[in-house]
Every structure is written in structure tokens, then in C-alpha cells.
Length: 371
Ligand code: SAM
Ligand code: SF4
Ligand code: SF4
Image (cartoon, rainbow, N blue to C red):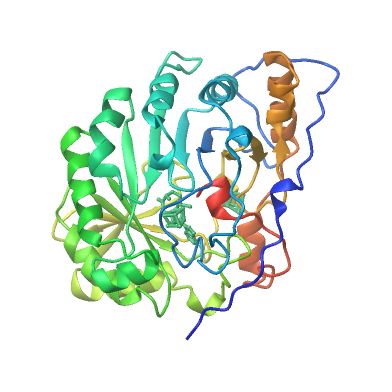
């Protein structure tokens, strides 16, 4: 059976340069949006390229040899990224996650990590600096990432079964190499490694229990993610979403689970632990239990567009501000202004409408703004 592919309109270019308000302000370490959510997390996409073609993210039919990835000159330089990061930290950002595309494909990524790890919050603390990767280059790079100041990694892994894994990454990449990468990351001190498994009904849902069993009692924390309607090219259908409640039910039937309290208010993953003390698993219920109310996240795309929501149709071209020579104060004021105007809560609206919004809203690709 071939997957239904919806052609992508190129929304990367529908982006406006944000206005600079006439009264400039100094960042106070706290800026809140229209729903009183503070700006606390920044996800930075460092490349739109990837060596995988995961069927739910960069299906081959769209991301083929003719696909126009961003030219090198469009990418934010490490100096530009660090300058943005510094402005965000002054507004209260405490956590920065590097993503992509595949972030480990960006040349000299450890140099960027070194630059970011030197930043301090207004209270004098170092940042929670992490990275999400498909794990393919992790064994090779883990030590350099650690040495540069990275705190932890999250590895995406959808199956332990080599045939299913290869079918999902669609480039014949063997699962053993990702497992080796996870081991090395743990050894060099990039733990606890979080493992993200996107569950797509009919594709890898039979891997739920084997994955749980494999990571039970290990130092890694496995999290199950509901397959989301991000982007416009994965042909998302509600009936391919396996709700977290079903994931819990299947694991619980073999290895009893009990729910535990979140680590902090607004944690995106629901936490469950094995009744026999075998550690915990996380459930990221982005479709069935939206967490927009606690969403404190801004996204900076590879070419310097800011997105206030994963499902936004357009971004705000802050790179243009930087490249036209605006001052830190001007750019910082523009960022604060964008956050204050934010009212996004796409997943909550979609939940109410049970997927009805999914095809109606034009969305940007996840590989472009980062997951
Ligand atoms: N390439 C890296 C990786 O795969 O970890 C980082 C970028 S990837 C876009 C970030 C995360 O988004 C991955 O964990 C991936 O599984 C997840 N993701 C991509 N498409 C998704 C979808 N349609 N629904 C849910 N998660 C998705
Ligand atoms: Fe690449 Fe990550 Fe998307 Fe897979 S999920 S295609 S590894 S960016
Ligand atoms: Fe945040 Fe938008 Fe996701 Fe809601 S839908 S949790 S506002 S990124």
C-alpha cells in the first residue's frame, strides 16, 4: 500500500519581518503571552537536512533529490544563533534544545554548543542545554558534545525490530547503530538519555511492549509520542493515532504501571512507573490531551524565523532584523512584543474538533522548524 501524500506548499517564505515597537525596553527576565504563559524554552533548528526519511516526518515522495533545501547563506551562523539565544535568555529562557532536521549533520555543531553553554540566566545559572537526534551519528560525536558542554540528549527510536525500523527511517539504517549511540551517550555522561518513540498505528504499534521491556530497568527513559498532524506532507489521519491511554493499557497488561506526579508544572510527558521498581516511562499525549495551557516554547528555524507554535502557518523573520543591523535592544523588544501577542493553542482546538482542523490549517514542516 502506498501512503497518501499531500503536496506541500512552501510556507517557508510566507514570513513577515516583525515590527520594532517605538518604545524600546530592557528585558526583565519575564515576558508573558495573552494566556499568561511565560517564555521559558527555546528550540533551535540548526539544519533542515536529514539523513533519514522517516515516513511521518520527511516522506521520500516529497523530500526527494529535487527538494530544495535551504542554501548555506540562509542558515543562521553560530554567532547569530548565540546572539539570539542571549536575548532569549534575558527574557527568561532557561532551556535550549537543538534540533532539526538532524542536528548532528550541522558541521562543527560542538562549536555552537560550546558557545551556548557559556550563557547564564539572569539568576546566574547555566542553561539546560539539550539536543534531539536520530542517533545515527551519536556514537561518533557523543564525547565531543559532552566536552563542549551539552547536558543531555534525546534519541528518537521507533522500533527495535530492524525491519520495522528500516521501513520507518526509509533509508535502510540499522537499529543496532542507534542502540550503540545510546550506550555511548550514556557512558560519556549525556544521561539520563531520553528515548522518543512516535507510535504510528499499523506501522510500529506492535513494538510498544517490546520497547518498554527493553528499556525497563535501564538508565534510559522511554517516552511514547502520539503521532501528530504536523506539516502538510505526511498524510496524517486520526485513525493512525494510538492514544497514550492505549499505550499504557498494553504495557500495564504485562508489566503493571502506576501514574506518578510530574517533575515540574507543565511537564509535557505524563509519568508512569513500573510497580516492581523497574523505572518509569513517559507519555506525550499531544493529540488526545493537549498541553497548550502550559506551552512556554518558542521555535527558531534554521534560517532565523520565529514560530510561536509548532502548528503555526508562518514565522517572523528575525534574521532580517539582525542582518539589517538592528541593535540588541531593538531585536529584544521585537521578540517581547511577539510573545506578548501570542495566543496559540492549536492542539487544544484540534482536540475539541477531533482532527477536523488538521487539513484545514496550512502548517510548516517539522523537519524545518524542528520537533
Ligand atoms: N532528527 C532528529 C530526531 O529525529 O530526533 C530531530 C528532529 S525530529 C523533527 C524531532 C522529533 O520529532 C523526533 O523525535 C521525531 O520522532 C518527532 N516527530 C517528527 N514527526 C512527527 C509526527 N508527525 N508526530 C510526532 N512526532 C514527530
Ligand atoms: Fe529526520 Fe528526525 Fe524527521 Fe526522522 S524525525 S526524518 S530523523 S528530522
Ligand atoms: Fe504549544 Fe502550539 Fe503545541 Fe499547543 S499546539 S502545545 S501552543 S506548540
